[in-house]
Length: 257
Image (cartoon, rainbow, N blue to C red; front, top):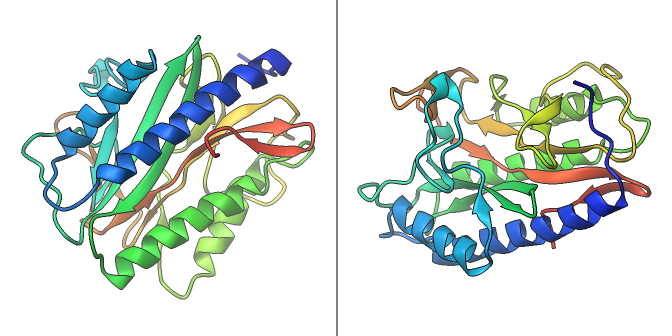
């Protein structure tokens, strides 16, 4: 299968679902504080999805080992890298960080975005990790334009992280992906890479940029639920993600106001 090239109608529909995705994360951010459970975040997401007649792409999605994902969103706390499952028993505490990853559908089009939030007052190292991870995403997105090499997204993220005075690592086991009328499709977006490698990006491509940055080792571990991915050394991890397009005048970020 080749990489889909999308038309003006596709762009319009992605703008719609992108705005909903952005708004959903804003609403979830508003309730995140010490004392709520990750399942409370899930319930707020369900309320939003139902209110606007949307659908979660996560609920029932089959991934690792063909096990359906049991929730509408992912909530990844502290050393959880990605795909954390909301749980009534997991109460957020002052100083935690939580990555909230949402993918929703409207009219057959998918919007996918993630932000990492502070829970109350957090440590300086956690704050720096969150800020650095967001900047890494932004650095990668700046490379998304017609005619540039796909590998330059990962190359620039890697260069930025390696240039940090604080030693971080980039998760290499999970990456960004093409999106549109399917949740996951070509191209695969690596967050490390060689300069001027890979295909040249073309106007009309849709994909996500979603670096996961760890405060310790890049090594990962998949838990027994076949979904939750943690840092092998239990170090903090953060993630940011946008759904973007190669547009007529450069990059267009769908999941941003």
